[in-house]
Length: 497
Ligand code: PEP
Ligand code: CO
Image (cartoon, rainbow, N blue to C red; front, top):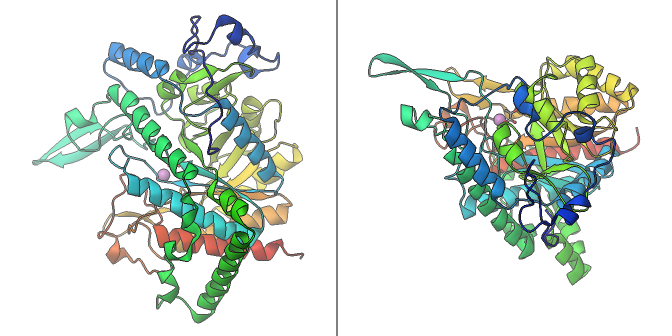
């Protein structure tokens, strides 16, 4: 988000005739929708999704409790502003043309317990350092979008989970993330609790408040060498050739940073005022709809819980509730695209979600898996390109590469992640399209959840510092190394063929 949030806007509550937060009827009337707004062309409202099939539906046991929580949520001030959202759309439009690079990353699932200063600071630090490496390699500015300040809901492959407790099988609702229920395996914890909608929103607000303060208050120190941990450079598993290459890139990077400092206060200040935007999977539509509002002097409806929500692989059915909801909002949208997606389905989704073919509106986040990408991605790229659809192609090399060790631990291999990333870049290059961004699950902490990388995490290490409640994340060193490898691959290949 921009460091100094624009002047406070007032917002009308969703679907309500009574203006909220001091919005006068005349101010609201200035938000005249364009005739072509999807929200006005048919029967869209922030609630119209309720008449569709809801994939990954949460079975709240008490409807009245849910209504009360949603009403409280709707009355709270928004987390982000429409001005910030429109700015992100412009930056994404640039990335679609290859003039910027889009970096989206953060936890698989944020937890309420994780709302701590060091965990948030470490996440910003790794995002910032990765983006500096990428800027150095690709020579374009980076748009930073965190999977944070709202990434609390998780889709599950099965709505229930069975475990043997005291010799008998117990079946309970799956853990759907801290927005919905608790991870502990007992009846009370797993009961979907509407109160968590409000609690998670408050934690998102606290997280975002701290991020805005850090961005405002000179977080740029992070570019000084003492804030970088490059100890993986000296790990025995790194080949001498690769170490020399990393060293060369590091030297270029610190030269670049020194040069920027030498330019004087203003440039360092600019470095300090780095923008971060927020994103999360828009899974729980009660949460999303409660903060979907019209804003004065702008057309259309905005989801003000995050700058850029995304639609998950399991909830992108054309006739489902999620697509119905997302077609009506103005925010830029991510759409996860897995190996089952067919070209005609993708076009139908684009027609529904971006009928005006607006630049900066859609990021297609492909997550095919290292062994499927070369087969699955080219037909999609060709079809979208041939149809002249404006999209940002983003590679998520995480979600198609989950594996389980012999001991049953969920992990991902650094090599498979790198392989998908490189193959994705090659596919786009061959098709004449642009890989404009990447999407990672990572943390700024020293966890051991993914195997591989120069720091040498092996299967034996996985039990040491494995704290994710969902998918395994890259740790600080693996993330930074991946940024070096990405910059090396894409930077090199930007040179004329
Ligand atoms: C995720 O991003 O955490 C996720 C569940 O992704 P996907 O919808 O691509 O499986
Ligand atoms: Co995940």
